[in-house]
Image (cartoon, rainbow, N blue to C red; front, side, top):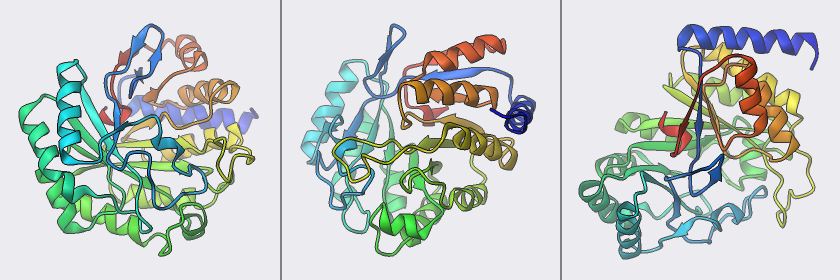
Length: 309
């Protein structure tokens, strides 16, 4: 880490601590275990393991560990069982069709019933939605719309396999904001095979929303996907963007999401992110905790999705 990056990280941390009290919140989403704690916010796929797009970075593999619930009856039964078991909430997700749409309309009555009859907090990776559907999702009781944001039309077409590029993303951001859903944008770093391609444009799109919180995630090369052999974004580049995001959005709560490479990469990135004043971090490494200790930051553990804040 050169002096220029170090100075940028320190400036970002200074701004972060001006906006909010110094500290680091650690989240354990899904059913993950770490440091003797277990998450209480499982992910549910309303399409099971199936995805109609087969994005190059995922090929449906990220759906495999999720609880499947592909009919309203299955979702209702699963939600009630999880609520009775002490879960705090659900992250609804799934595989999109060729345009990125998920079968939300069929699931809305079950979502509304769970929202009304349990204490579950319900959030959703909504995929592509229009204004009418966004209003219905809000009315059903979904607390937050989690939306992946990329800034390159080439990345949207080539990696996410969306034929109309960024049009669906733009429609969804506008629709969810107009519906009054809390939008939690997820900026994906290095999605174009480990290369920066439009991330700063994505940051400008997000800044226009004036978000309360923003989640940053990093491309992970996954086995048995077309991008399995790609190298992840260099740690220093990811850390630099994390700091630059703080300079652009000084008052938002910045979160480092669970999607980022593991092992030594995560250890190194987490330490730099904490130095940059990241407010929250999902599924931590020893690097995050050691950096927090070195900086004298109090650490708070929570057993939910990091989007909740």
